[in-house]
Structures are given as C-alpha cells and as structure tokens.
Image (tube, rainbow over all chains, first blue to last red; front, top):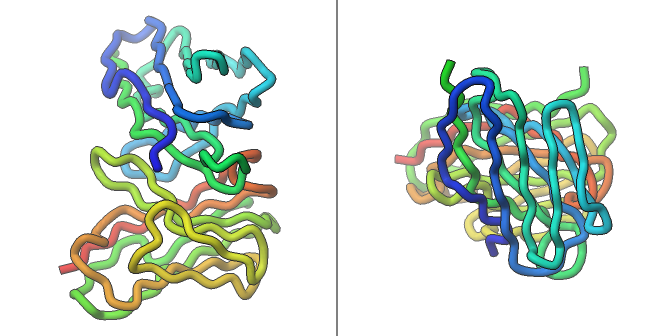
Length: 113
Length: 114
C-alpha cells in the first residue's frame, strides 16, 4: 500500500532559488522521514520528524508536518547544482505500528547552474 | 566504515534460475529490509526483519524469500525469477524499527531477468 505521495513529480529551478516539495499521506502516522537519492544510487536519510513535531531544520533543509492535513513539506533553501536528485518521503506503515516504512514515488529535482 | 553492502551489484539471469542477493551490515542493526524500485512506482518494501529469525512480509513479497540467521546478514532469494522481477533492489538497515529510525541503504543491485 502506497502511503506517501510527493508533489510535484518533477521540479526544475535555478541555482540559488528555493525548492519546495510536498508529501501527502492517507492514514495516521508516528513518524515521517525524507530521503534523497542521486540517480540510481542508494537513498540517504535527510530528516525524521515525529508526529508531535511541527517543524525541523537541518542546515539548508526545513521540514514541516501538518498532521491535521496529513501532509509534510521539504524546503531546500539557496539550492545548489549538487542538490539535483530525487527526494522521497516515507511514513510508518498504515497499520498503526512502525515496523514498516512506506515510500512515496518521489520528486525529481533539477537545479540548473 | 559503517555501511550496508550488497552483492552482486549487477546481475543478468534467465527465467527460473534461482539466485541470491546478499546483504550485510556492520552496524549491529536489528532491523533490516529489502526494497525494489521501479520507474513510476517508487520504492516498495519486499520483506523486513526485526531481528534474528524474525521476518515479515512487506507490500510485495510474492516470488521472494528471505532469511535472517545472523544479525548482520539478510539475503534475498529468488527461487524462480521471472521477467517482472527485473528491478533495482535495495537493502537497508536501522537500529530500531523501520519507521522510527534512520534507514541506511546499500548501493543497490540491478537485476535483469530474461
């Protein structure tokens, strides 16, 4: 079962601009994570935000979580060409526990120099 | 260096020929899992393991088997591969349960079944 859905599917911006990606999910969650994947490579963890948190920062990354709307957003500020990658949100399984991690289909971000 | 390793990285095989993709982690993680990634479908979980001898199905377990005899290893077995199992496979591990902890991913295994 697919839990998270990212939006947009693809995003192209210029270096220095901010990039915002959104993730919506269907059922209650305990945690939401964001991952990054460079083309064909393994995923790299960016941020984990728990259901009782509303916002988290890590360097140029800002993640928000709105459990009432069942949505999260990932903001990358002052983007760089090296930020070009696919970004995925992942949520706990939709069966109440945290044993399973369900990924969305991802947003492909291209940052043009 | 803390890492998750997978072997082989690339594999071409034929329908019906049993194969095993190995996964090993050196971080003493309890939780390990396998995912497949297909264009337009994102990552889908195949199987996961909470600890030694404890495994459970993910969202797409059909056609796959796993075992967890040792904490560090979590091999993925395709008893009779079919072309629809052509995919990019990732192994991942974490200290605690998947949804609560950072997942560390291997580099991926690209499988082509003819």
